[in-house]
Image (cartoon, rainbow over all chains, first blue to last red; front, top):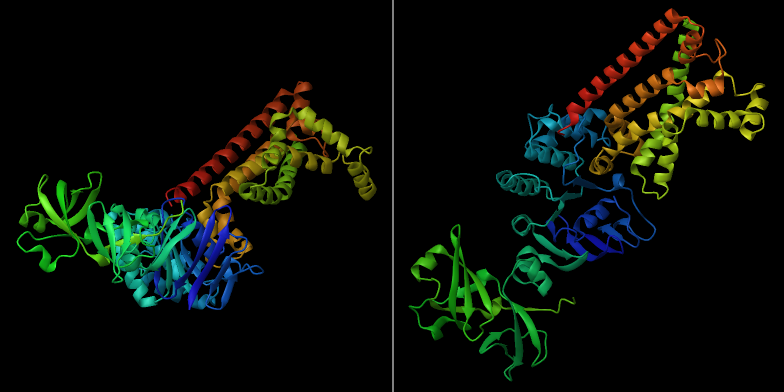
Length: 361
Length: 224
């Protein structure tokens, strides 16, 4: 079963077609104004889009003839600023979502949701007496109390501090482990999406750029736009050469890289990317030819230490205007004496070289 | 003390409140959420009694209530008497001049409810009316309370329009404000002074108490 979305609209501009797997966490990742919140609101039925088609399995929420009202959709929403009812205690906030139950069962279910969201003991507090993290958990308790099929989270961690956010990540994954429901998470934070989501949709200008399992999307951007959104700095030009043996070479300045054959004809110029974490440093104490794929000589320009690892910017030999970035553990920096001005050899495994489609911009 | 005038003023204020406030809440809620392009014009129309001289408002009301106008003739055929110079006419005039005092505080109160809260109510499965009674009205309550107090106090003190529309008929249209004017003209300063002081104290107390209540309500919600 999937949550199938087909949203096309003028204002807000949307051209989004995707099938989100049920029982998994899907992140809608995009910059501010990319339309991801509009998608969430369309799923919730809070905005009505002409020609939208939204269905959960065979259950139609929206099509040409149907627009099921929000209260009749099996959803729970945690808005960006939590949307708690300020005149109600935490418990009453949660109970308000349980109008579908007989009054006798509401309290029990509300307490169970509060337990699950780890806010037990705060039932009598009003929203203004709660911290940001506590408000977020109460909003989560209210959203899950109705046991919705789809839980919608609109940048739920943007208003809490970093340490609370880390704790809430753990709690969300634990909660998902217990409930196994479908969660759609809107975020502009790549790390957040990478840590929480099983499935990732990249969105820009209301358009779906790419979707798939998080690991695949993060490591294999399909277009330059996706690469930019994924904060991949290493995007270059190359020329494809199809060899008679069926293999392909990618000519990058004076270098010829062995690559899986891209979907491009012989001689075509393409854009390609490689993740900084996938650029390997050749060990100077081992002979090249024995173990290296696509070795490329380079000169170190800059080494910036960030926590336990370093961002290394290098100039590739024969390509003066090409800066390439790699991320290395600090112990490798020290062990192999990687320092500005030093010559090193990097290698680009063919499996890590990602040909990019034309972005269409 | 002109007790008949005091009772009449209190009755007029109460009737005005009972009729005007529910209508004002409905209009204010609509104005708070609508994106209709005519909104500024409608808001302007509702605020007119604040800026127009009471004599202008009174004049148009008088014309509308007269037996040369369709509403005036309709009222007369139904009740057998004219709206002008009657308590019913006074109520209508009082409602018209109090519209901005009733609508604006309630509108501001509804506007201060974050859209997220309305949407959260929908996501909690509440129908429009459930959301209205359980979420929006309790949150807009300080504004509604302010509207009630302002309308009540303003009705007690309204002079120009009441005089134009109702005249000065003791027991029928002579309110406290007109009675004070009447006594002052007759050099009965003791009676005029007593009623002026009573009006001053009642107005001050109701406004101060309502401000205090509103402040208390708002403090509870401010950081929510």
